[in-house]
Length: 282
Ligand code: AMP
Image (cartoon, rainbow, N blue to C red; front, side, top):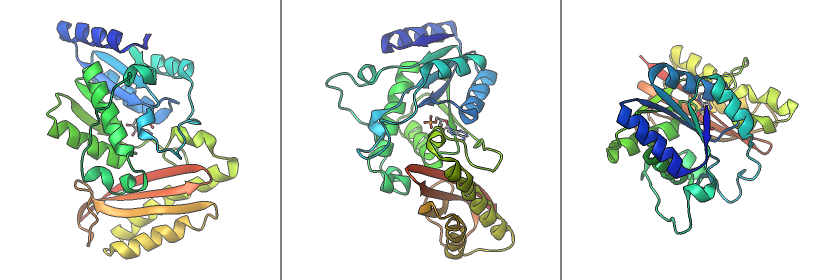
């Protein structure tokens, strides 16, 4: 396995593969790899000739008060883990490689990027779509893999690919969870033991909402109150948002029918947690 740090070198490798007719599976990440990332790498490995994993903590997608500086970084460990899953190339550019002096173009999916997570983290999704579009041009993947854990992000990227006619297939794979249901995240390294114990309530609240739907609950307001009540039983958790939306448009639903996504965001000390569940209401 090779670690490539230069954009030019990555483009050259991608062009060589493409000329040979090889398919490229691509997993964009910010590093601190865990089982969630590895599940995406395994799928890329199964389905493609070549696998590229990018490791890039993208400054554009962090707000001024967010955790860019303390986001975990350990490239040697990430490279080892990626290699153990059969990755061919880890692409880990410096920020100055990705955004050289004078670089000022941004990619933005309007509407979708400004609601829910986007309303709480202004500019976040613009940073995400800008880096993902740039990475797509550099890596030239056949298929790019994303996790359902970042539900809105995946929806926005699908929209971007469709609107810009990017020749990339987008695959969204299920959330990988810890034993207590907590969705794995690179940010959990910063949780204290007590916080970590409390974090499991997020998933329990989501599954309890799912149970309520299966028991006949059809009122989104009551459902949100139920989720909020459950999360707030853990004193350190602060609910930031609970949204019950149409799974495709991400518009809030007035009544529960069809496929809905339940999205939650909460703060636990200095750490922000998000999770979601898709429910088919029959
Ligand atoms: P990140 O490094 O957090 O930017 O994540 C890189 C990719 O891995 C994104 O597509 C995430 O949605 C995905 N991902 C992160 N955590 C998980 C998880 N627990 N299960 C599945 N995919 C995940």
